[in-house]
Amino acid sequence: MKDIGVYSTAPADFPDVAQKLSHEILSGRCQRGIMVWGTGVGAAIAVNKVAGMRAAPCHDNYCAHQCVEDDNVNVLCMGAWIIGPKLAEEVMQTFLNARFDSANPGLRRRVEKLEMMEKK
Image (tube, rainbow, N blue to C red; front, side):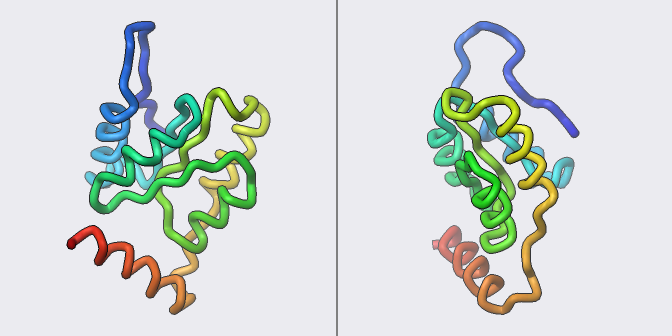
């Protein structure tokens, strides 16, 4: 585990953190990432701008495992203003324990289409 978060009270921008997190994953130094920021929506948008990255804002366990199992999401985004600490911990564990169902041809086909969209 590697924490690349914000360590001061100075203003910070989620696109900068999203780029840094994406670089860690794409370089192979990390397999997945978690961003906690405001609502989590802007963080997900920023991560999704980076080719090879897939982020989803999740505030429940179902979405946290489903986004990995079906869509091979590699960044979980949670809203600090939305989710409490206990539920955030559960959602994080669910996300980290989930695995992409690569044996399912339908899911694999859809993720391949997402990858093709990045190249257009």
